Amino acid sequence: MNPIRKKRLTLIGLMVAGIAVATWLALNAFDENLMFFFSPTEVAEGKAPTAHPFRIGGLVEVDSVKRKPDGLTTAFSLTDNAKAVTVEYTGILPDLFREGQGIVAMGQLNESGIFIASEVLAKHDENYMPPEVAASLKTAHDDGVKNMQSRVQ
Amino acid sequence: MIIRFFHQMGSPRYFYNVAGKMIPWFMVGFLITLVLGLYNGLFVAPPDYQQGESYRIIYIHVPAAWMSMFIYVVMAVSGLISLVWRIKMTEIIVISSATVGASFTFLALATGSLWGKPMWGTWWVWDARLTSELLLLFLYLGIIALHSAIEDKRVAARAVSILALVGVVNIPVIHYSVEWWNTLHQPATITKFDKPSMDMSMLIPLLTMAISFKLYYGAVVLMRARAEIVERERNSRWVQELVEEEAK
Image (tube, each protein chain N blue to C red):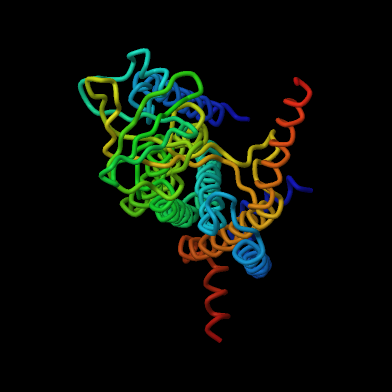
């Protein structure tokens, strides 16, 4: 390689490296703000803001979804399998909302520690499979659990 | 032999002729894989256990999103070669790729938004994945605008190459955004090292569509590059001979 090309290549290399470092520093500084949501553990630890609305993300705990008498308000507990936060939401829930599903809710904590959501979004996971496969996986799982239980007994 | 081929492809005249012969093959391959991929994806593949039929938008969304990043990397590499070695052909590749790349980025954003409304419950959120992909669209549009703002083609190509290289840091950010931060967008289904978390019957049409979109890009970039060559070399003898021949 002749010296001029070598010089150009070094300059470009330095430029790209410089921008990469600058981007990395900027993203690091904004890390908190780039988090789309807080987990129930972070909320329990008091890391989430109390003065303004924020998002909370986790799984809808099984057997925790309750309808209020007004018919529109739903209360459920949101968990990350370590801590749980009770969420109340008035309005129409997205299609994918169900027990065990990952969701993200926007809102604020009230004085009694209940999260009053103004918006509930369903979070989809990266798994795609036909219904039959999902069903057979579930049966296999249930069978496995039963085997384990019978062995313990 | 491969090195000689690349040397020859550096000559606009040679490139023009070879590209002319390659385009029909790319087009035929694109149409075959497109029909196969769409038919298998929309009619043969089973519905998803959670999303039902609506998941089928991934057959457009995912390949388009892959292409949006792939094309940008092609542009950045060509830009680097143009800046260091001042090769005319790679300059042409950079600018010929920009509109296709912008279209794929727009397609990925639009299809994602259409899917997001019923599934997530919103058209748009400012999470890291969606925002960085939108930034990619703006980079493409910036490259197109910068190129048309400068009269001298070679100066324009140099400016555009620098912009393409500056923006390339966004590519790993898009790719890893779903891992580095909590996002509403789900993490990658298909990764290089792991077994894909998708059933084979759904995966094969998806990969067919990915090949199809690559072939489409190949065909379009060659067509645009040929047009660009003729415009740049309009004063050279071989282009004038070509025009005379066409006129007959």
